[in-house]
Length: 587
Ligand SMILES: Nc1ncnc2c1ncn2[C@@H]1O[C@H](COP(=O)(O)OP(=O)(O)OP(=O)(O)O)[C@@H](O)[C@H]1O
Image (cartoon, rainbow, N blue to C red; front, top):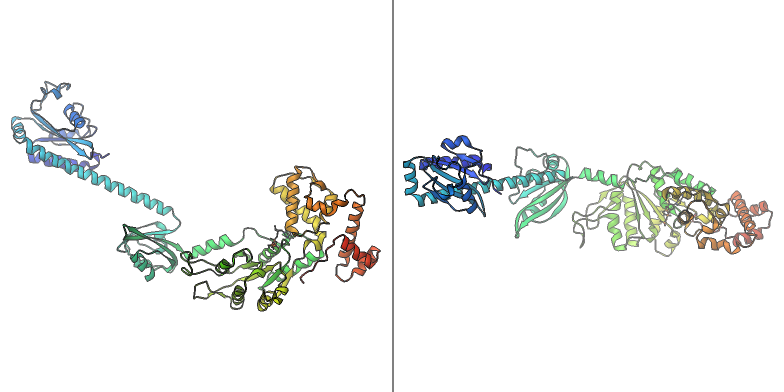
């Protein structure tokens, strides 16, 4: 809806102009019959409602112009309380029409014979003249409304732009900056008194050409007035195929790096104290790992799946001077071969179909100053093994499709559950890379070779799952622990954690007893459960394990047999019967 009052001074000027031309009094009312402008005696009554405006009300309602030469006697004057006392000689009223609405009335009033004669003699040209004046007012009020709407849109747009976390520039087809948000002003040092042109802010022809040709562009650009490197994304604006300009989003590259760092520095700090296990083998491993952690050495962690290779790698990272930087883990066996290269080394824009605009950082670059954990390195394809070797030797990476070689400061920790030695022999793993990685080998023994760690791990997981699942568990029976300590744990600590989680979930409060254990665990020993010798066997098994632990070093089973008071042959048989770990270790 248009309001004449919004252009009051124009309306008044129009009333004055009509009055001067016709030498007659003029008043102009809005749609609510409030006097917006007036001349002569009406000038002092602006803003007041025209209660007696029966003629004007009729014009508003019908949209038809009215000429009254007999005020007081005309039928439109019938309801007027001033009828009979009316000072007016004649009256002309025409509607002001905008689109389909009538937004006001222009009224001419004569107060003497001479004015009346002028009105009546030139009725047609007078009406035409007034209609033109009404059109003029409508043109002004529409223009005013459009200006207001576009100013509102601009200020809404600017408010939205200022909410964004990127600097934003709106560019027109002449490369002039028409709008920018506060962050853009800060990032590019835009002076608010000037209307900058793109080339005065961002110093790169590739960007200017992209805007000029209406093409998208992404990449690092040097600021012109600032020393900062800025990352820019250009999105062209086209209207019916015509280039109208572009929107450019701008980020501070330092800020992006900071965010990447925040996102990649692990929130889960892992310390050696979180690696549970007091068996002599674990103690020796932890001591060795703690010793080498602060060094820059590349480490190869070997061990079966679920033995805690990543846990150990995280603890090593946390105990090194790199702990404030990223720990980036990548499972080389879990990523399809065709994607692994770009995941590790990143790629440049346009290096292959489907490559993201602006390219992509690889895991090596993300780990800059920190540690990269290459899990399942044994699954790495040979052609990538060459690239890894180059990174290790030159401490630089080259992105896929790139020509630059980027310097890097990354410590590599690799891990595998496979026998790399054997892979080297079959030609599946490069010997030179193996020796390069295997500078300091760390081998985590499988859980079945350190079953004495089982009770403490069980307790650790009981506490953990009781807390995270919010279930109260009063304890676990000795018989259950004995069964767990006799199971060979092919899935190692991960499997044990899952079993305890299962028990905590199933027990519904109270104590965990043997019958709650998953069937596969029970079935290792339970066939003998009805047999009264179950506990005796368990005791015997434990005694053998203790004796083996005391002598500890393989090859001294004679001593263990002596301790137990049995022959060497019997000891070997019982080790086999009770499935006490004799599996190959990697050291
Ligand atoms: N000694 C330990 N103390 C506490 N938790 C452990 C221990 N060893 C392993 N875990 C836990 O077991 C789970 C498996 O560990 P992790 O992922 O480090 O093993 P992994 O050897 O890297 O396995 P994979 O080779 O399958 O990737 C994790 O939840 C880890 O926290």
